[in-house]
Image 1: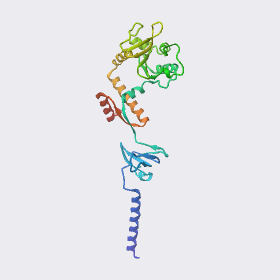
Image 2 (image 1 turned 30 degrees about the horizontal axis):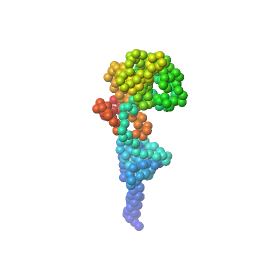
Image 3 (image 1 turned 120 degrees about the horizontal axis):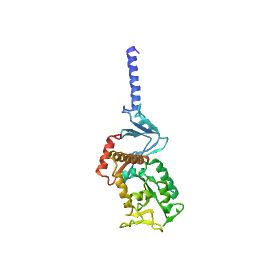
Image 4 (image 1 turned 180 degrees about the horizontal axis):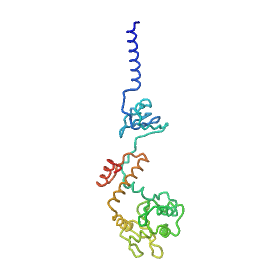
Length: 288
């Protein structure tokens, strides 16, 4: 074999090796922003229901496949997460909810797991330490029938406001019942609403009193509106900057809560045009 044929043979072998290498690696691709591998990926694709890995670029799924197939999407700046055999599923969709209501709830005390009235007053006491005098403290979710012991003193199974009012003399407190059909108020909240022992029950509502005729802090049905009116008046004095800052915080808390539960799409029922504009603005510039 002469030198020329030898070089030709060497070049042919090099081409074969390069072709084999290229067939194994596949065509070059733009690296993904994130890759999840070594897992069980639920694709929701009947033709290929499961995969080992997934590549994500921006808001788009770039590819799904085996670990080897997705490896070529890993670049220097790609965030790689080893699922270690764990399951990854598409984001959940909330079909009907109130997005800002969710965010507002995260700003209030969650009373759903309180075992008794003492635990509720302790939660309010902690909130007082973090709240400016004069600012409202809100909570929701209490239910006297689920407590492990009855409060004392009590009227119709409900506690009286004295213990709550002692720990929150400078902060109005409104605690909504789990049903949404009653509100518990401390003395400060009742004073701001102008509630006295002589305040009549509004149509469709009731202010619960003790044996001496004093309101104990329980406002049933439409009577809660007496408290909410005073709350609305206080909030109406906020500056536009304060209103905007709180609105953004509500959205941010709702987003955080949804993502923590795997919710990535939310059908917001009854959102105002103003709220939708805020969503768009925060979507375009989350920091602004």
